[in-house]
Length: 252
Image (cartoon, rainbow, N blue to C red):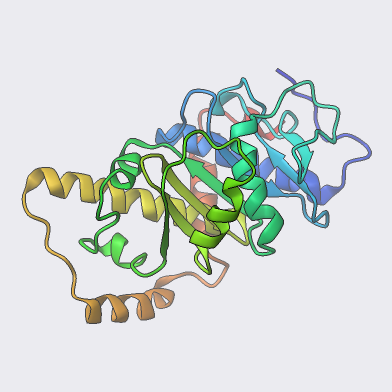
């Protein structure tokens, strides 16, 4: 596995993005959100609208470092001479959103057990918890069409997403996007918690839906409980401190 540091022709902004994304992969692995060598978190390279960073296909999330992330263009072509391939099924989906949504700087796709379980239910995410209440009215749904390698599915993905930035891929998993990696991370954490609670509540008894008027108040007031440093920033920094206690090799 490559462990080289920043190359002379790499901008400071790209290296910072690489370290942030590598940390995110390690955090996902720590939280049990990885899926062998599959799934993706992609991040646009700052200042380069058509350049993105993605995990090297063939490595687990616990092996990702800042230097072995692969830099690709909007069509998935390698730009940095990386010896690693890119998972076509993963980036076909991500490239559609990166191409058509200027605010989709970071995109997260997972196959967690709870996320896949909820995506496989006809009712989707139900308004039964503190966390789920934040998403009600803000989740798009897209029916399963098989492994995502056909470009023509992109038109339907965009149409089904609309103006929302969280999607349940039915029978498949979850998709989250945001203008920053930290915000995308926080959305993913909240969505994962909502899905876990729904699965547990269904096993425990009969879940009770939160009334729409309470959901409206909840969503209105959520901004009041965040630190003024940007969505997800303190949460992500806390997780970095946690993973650094055992392994900081992601920084290389």
